[in-house]
Length: 160
Image (cartoon, rainbow, N blue to C red; front, side, top):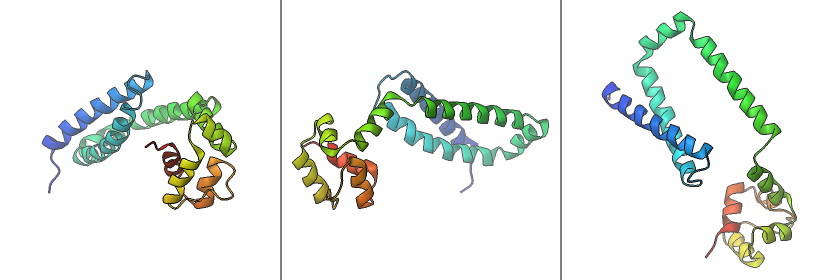
């Protein structure tokens, strides 16, 4: 199947619009929780569409390389990205700080803070092959079991 502008251009345009809009909604914390999943999954699809777009338009893009505008643009985007990453590492968001403290707190305290019934959480974890034996923190649960942090937290937080 040959790549065709008639298909790639509408997809990349619409996905760009939705990813941009969802990014703005996330930035202003509007519809939190709903926009993140759209932004992440369509972001991946946007990358795929972008690759196809670059393949289709490679001849035209080479002109920009020859004009010397690519390098300054690359340096600008790279510079802004580095500044944002450094800023985020120096001043992490409050939710990240809280989550990091909860997963490193003693299990009893973490479960109380999360308003989770200890025995029910242990049952859910054990049903899914995750042992709490020897664990002193939520973090040590996933480390001791070689499990994904998201899986452990999802099982702990799961409600009937």
